[in-house]
Each structure stands twice: as structure tokens, then as C-alpha cells.
Image (tube, rainbow, N blue to C red; front, side):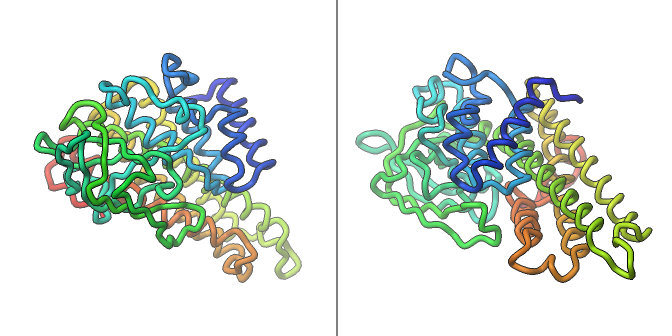
Length: 363
């Protein structure tokens, strides 16, 4: 699995731009100069016509910088959910502002700490001008600032998707206090909010299961990028920090720990790329689930381990607010739980392989 010259050029362009525009201010130039918001959108909808591998490249670079831009929430989750819906006015033509990055959307999906579509209890009933939605959604990425909410709720036909104006009546949004301050989740409370049906009534479960696989592949790429950056910083510090008259990187025990971290990062990168290439080749259903669940599990644990080693090998400075080590460690913890913890994805993998045993909830 090798990246093309064009994909490597994309990586270099994103990295240069993130260095020039730190933090949240990077979103506008990323969208306007590189077109990341519409990167994986078909050309007939105004996008670049790329796919999951290009998404992987962007997510790796965002992970390196712990960038807080709404790429994962809007360009991956919400946009891919609209594309996967396949029919209806929203599924057939994406809002132009979403493809250009001028506006953003958020997928309001998780409930009670679970990303399993079967756990959805929010309700949608027919109303005078469409549908009325009631329920509570948690862990909505970039949900506070999104222009449009894409909400999963149950109708008589099953789980369905609805677009809801972010500032519409009956919509309450509040940011939560996360461990990882670079991620912006929200809690969304719907009290008879007006929504428009996306795609077919009752087809939301299928869409969400596919989007979960795409989300896991994308998040795995972010985790790889962040873990690789942790290793880079730690190797550099091991060459600078002197103990007993020698750089600590010259000690055999430290070399072993850094070598182990390198193996974890590269193994995680292989798992993440495997899921991305499969998604780019059109894999769906159990085939994609196997690779995406593997990537999410492997990359979550690798990032957590490497971020922990970063703190340990930096010594006292690694636990100070002045150093970035704690930021990577917090991102590792938060991303490990996002879209379900590793043990849940291993259970999904077992189910996709046809092995016996129940799939636990994703809390």
C-alpha cells in the first residue's frame, strides 16, 4: 500500500498550511486553498472526486498538529452520511456551502455513550411541515458551531436521518467540558425540533453503520499522525537530554523503548492504511467493518501507549502545562473512546468474522 505522488503532495501542502495557520484559523485556508471540505465528494456534486485515502492523508496531518478544525465532524461524518443516504433532496445534492467549507454540518448520533445505531432512542413523528424530533444527543463533534445538524432518530419505519437547522426552534446546543480541549463535542437537546427527512425512511441504520466504518478509518489515521509526532518529539528529546554525561537516547533501555514505540506506530499505520484503501476501493459491509474495526482498535491502543511513553521519557517536563506532551496524552485518551472503545471494535470484528458471542455496548 503506497501513496501516489499526488497524495504525497497533498500531505506536504496540508502540513505547510497547518504550520502557517495554527489552531482553528486553519479551516478557512484548508477549505479555500486545498479544498479539503469537498475532497472526498464526487465531482458531480462539486467535489474533488477523491476518496478515503486522501481523507487518511489529511487526517494524519491534522493529528500531528492536534488541529481543532471541523474536518472530521463535517467533511467526514456529516458529508459521508448525506452521500450514503443516496436518495431524497439532501442525499441527491449536497448543499454547496458544505462542499466548499463555507458552512459546516454535524452528525448528531450518539446517545448514552453509545454509537451503536440500535441504541438510538430519539424519536421523530410527522408534523405540519415535515417531522418533529425529540431526544438528546451526546458527543456531537463541532455541534455548537455547525450550521446544520444531521440527526438520527427513530420513526415507525426504524432509524432515519433528518436535517435540522442548527439555530432552529426546539434545538438546544451546549458545549461539554472534555479532557481533550482540542476537540469540540456538544450535547444537543431536541424538543419538537423541525427536521427534513434525508434518504429513505428507516434506512438510517444502514447509513450509520457504513459511516461508522468510514469514521473509524479516518480517526485511525488521525491517531497514527499524532502517535508519529509523539515519537518524533521523544526521539529528538532523547538526543538532547543529558544524564550521567551522555544523551539519554544512547542508553540501551531507552533505545529499546523507542524501538518498541516505532513498531507500534508503523503497525498502526499499516492497519489504518488498510482500512483507507479498502474504503477507497468501494468495500462495504462486513469486509469494511473488519478492517475499520481492526484499525480503530489497533490505532487507539498504539497512540495511547506511545503518548504514555512520551511523558515517561520526557521526565518532569512531560507533565507540565508548558509542554505539549499532556495535550497528546489527552487526545489519545479521548480518541480511544470516540466512536466506541477498542474492546467494542474487537467485538464488532469478531461479529464480522462470524465468530460467536454478543457485541457489547460501545460505552
